[in-house]
Length: 224
Image (tube, rainbow, N blue to C red; front, side):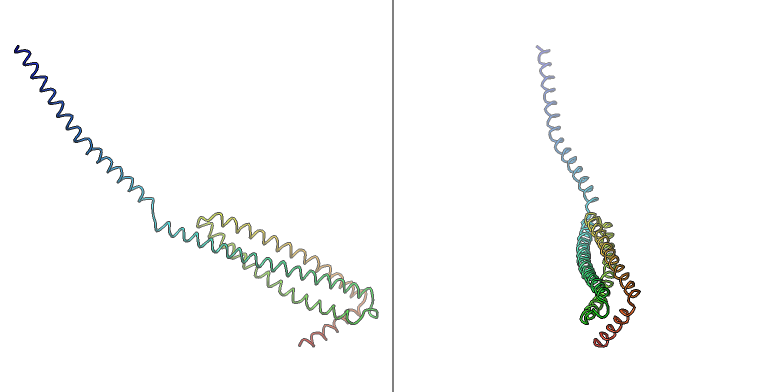
């Protein structure tokens, strides 16, 4: 009997201690997990603050946005100038073609068979050629400056990270340069043909040179 009572006392004491330990674990565990969670959140916020720089990102965005505007403006300038160069070059070549036709007709008809209004047309065409050549030289100067401006816009766009805009305007610059060179080559070939024809006219009919000079002097005196 005494042994059974002693056994029950030890068993009850063991159960009581087990319940106390379980309560302590339940009371402590949430606090420990809360502290770990708090520490983890603080570390995550610290890492986020280290990479998030609102001032820097805002400035970089504004710079890229400004480079896009400059690229668009430079592209528009290139386009407008190129169209003007092409139009003026075509008008110059048309005038050169008319001049060549008039000179050939004058050589064919001779001094006596060439009507007076034919020389007037030739003088008028040469006056138009002079103006068109001057305008074309001015436009090529514009194109040089437009190319420099576009190149600067491409460089600053590349440095700011706006790679797409930089590549686009570089392609536009290359296209404009090739188109201008093509116009120069076509005009140069026609000018050479006109020059050779005039030299042939002077050799075969020297009096045509005096005729043209007289008509040009009269025309200039009228303009003045």
